[in-house]
Amino acid sequence: MHGSVPHHDLVQSTNLTRGQNQWSALDWWPPIGWWPEPARDLLEPGSATASATFVLPPRAESVHSARSFAAGTLSGWQLADLLDGMELVVSELVTNALRHGMTLTDSRAREAMRLSLIRRGAHVTCAITDPGTSAPVLRDPAPFEPGGLGLHIVESLSVCWGWCPLVPQGKAVWAVLAA
Image (cartoon, rainbow, N blue to C red; front, top):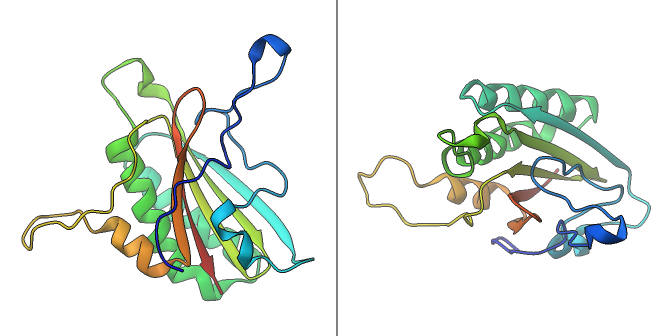
């Protein structure tokens, strides 16, 4: 079941005049019970649920911080089997968010990314939010082109992955790993 599946689970587009909120990359936290719609068939009824979210500044050091956070969280959840794969997935998704989701030359220079890890039984979803609007693209780089393989790594290590826009701005890119 490998592959990217765009979905709109994370989008909450309600009318502000009715007193309801909208999520954006700046304020999205995984709602209780959230799980990517394309991966719902992986869930076992009654499976343990936990989540952890970490705010990352738009700096290169955030890649290391995100890996450390993921490693500590998985260790605490007794899911060390996922550690190596999750560290690679987190590295690739945070690097992509920094390169393609952050615009440091305008007023959004101080915006942050969020890394959320959501556990449901033996599966863990890694979701990265950023203020960018462009869709992640799985591409085939030229043989000597540096970079361009990050989403191939994510795809090879995950059960499935995808993304969705957030309202009024931003996006979330997610990947599900299984122990």
